[in-house]
Image 1 (tube, rainbow, N blue to C red):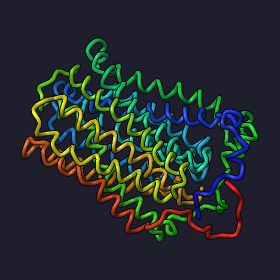
Image 2: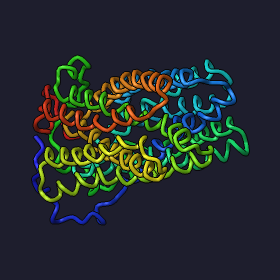
Image 3: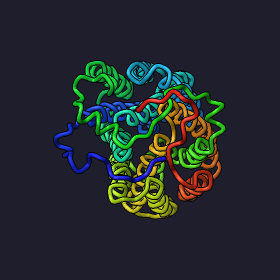
Image 4: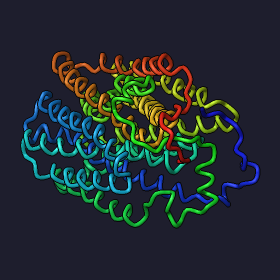
Length: 438
């Protein structure tokens, strides 16, 4: 069980003398996630242009989005298992290579079917990124820093969502929309080189000082270094808590990602470039939430709060801050809409930093990727259903009001599910006798 006891070496060590190589690893995850999100976000940014040029309707777009979400869910499920089986050193670059090629392939598509196949491949491969990142954070960071590190690498999803609306419209206007897909696909291949040159596991990395390795391992409890079957994971309440929270809150982020540009364009009659600007502002705001959510739980634990209290308060605050997004579609001023959606997006990222870390808080190392994969799979399936529902609502009513009303409540229900199933967060007892420190 994890408690907030003082580290035996806290008084003797200074972080500046320990070393900071673990943050280099976090930077690799940051850029991987930024590219991952750029590759998927381009479609939402270019929706007005693609709909005009290729004669899509709302159902066509919803079907393309659903295709991505279906294989993204599968990618989460099997990608998480892959990371637990072969490790992130090999698993993450395999996923990154495939999604980079798939992203570039969008530039060759000219039909709904062509985009659907490209999105299927993109989703299947991109699903491996987050399970790999969460597992890597669990390996490279002490418990008290994991949420902060998760918040930092997860903030890259906002960076990707900012870069796209600020650059893609310009590229589309001056070089054509296929070029935008080719450029982002190429970025992933560049990242592969950096990963190959820098990454090794913390147990063997030559640039990791002994003091920093001891700092990373400080405060950890013994865990079993054996693979945990999916059946066993499904018998744990904590797994269900994570999956239910993902099913309720995960589709909200996909709604923002794929439909916010369309909402702004239609509600306020904006050009493609102005839509990109305001979308960029929303995701700029959300960066602060991602980092603040991780910082808050770390700050609370450093002041003696238990892991359970710090983690749950750090989830309650953003859950409450999301609620005002219900007015977004009713206001007449674009800046008010941008503000409330921006705060909601920031709150989602703060929430996610702690929800992802919840898995490494409570699960053995060899189960982290699999549980994140299970949660991503169930959330992805729910997101598919929501994507179809969003398309239907917009086709029938043309209104975003009910959609933002739905989005405003999901986080509070998610936290309620976590509290009911996991009244106290602590490391699960190892079920097998082969134990070593990880």
